[in-house]
Image (tube, rainbow, N blue to C red; front, top):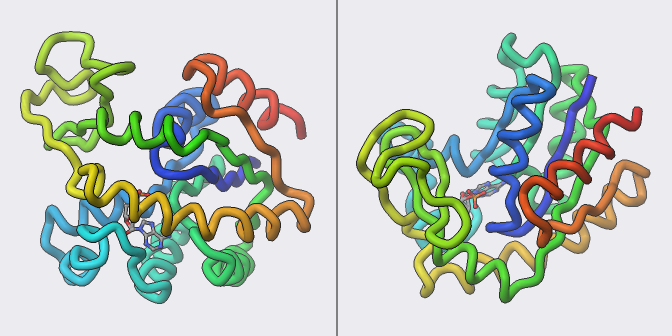
Length: 217
Ligand code: AMP
C-alpha cells in the first residue's frame, strides 16, 4: 500500500506527476486546492469561507482544511492508497494529519518533495491556465492542449487563469508557502519518510525518478 504525501511549491509539478502516479498505481489523488476550487465553484459553505483567503494567496484556516481532508480520507474509494497534494502545508497541519491517519488507520508511507527554483516557478505559474469545466491544468509554454482550444480530458472549449496565478498574487503565494516548506521537510526527514526529487527535469524524467522511489518498498 502506498500512501504518499507529495510536497512542493506551487508550480513544482505536483498535479502533473500525480496524474502519472494515478495512472500506474491507481491511488486516489487528494488535492486540497482542487477540493477548495470545486467548493468555490459550487458555492458551498466551505467554498464561500475559503474564497476570501484563496483569492489573496493566503492559507485557509487549519480546522477547515483538516476537516475537509479527514472527510475525504474516510471515503471507501481509497483502497489502493492515496496521494496527498497541497496538505499538509505546515507542521501544525502535519501533526493534524498524523492524528487523522491514526484514527483512520491509513498512515503515510512515503513523502516526496519536488524541488524547483523560485524563478522557474514564477515563469511556470504565470503561463498556467485551466479548463473551466474539469480543472485540467495546461501551460502556454510546456503543455498546450493537443487539439487547439479543446481540453484533452473533457473536450470543453473554455479555459481560465486561476485568480491566484496572476502575477500580483503569485509572489505572496510563493513566499507564504516557501517559509513553511523547510520545517515541513525537516519534520518528515526526522521520521525517515522524505525523499527529494529534482522537479526541473522534463515531466517524463520527473516521473521516472518518482517511480523509482515508489517502487522501492
Ligand atoms: P493549491 O492549488 O495547492 O496551490 O491551493 C490553492 C489555495 O487553496 C492555496 O493558496 C490556499 O489558499 C488553499 N489551500 C490549499 N491547501 C491548503 C492547506 N493545506 N491549508 C490551507 N490552505 C490551503
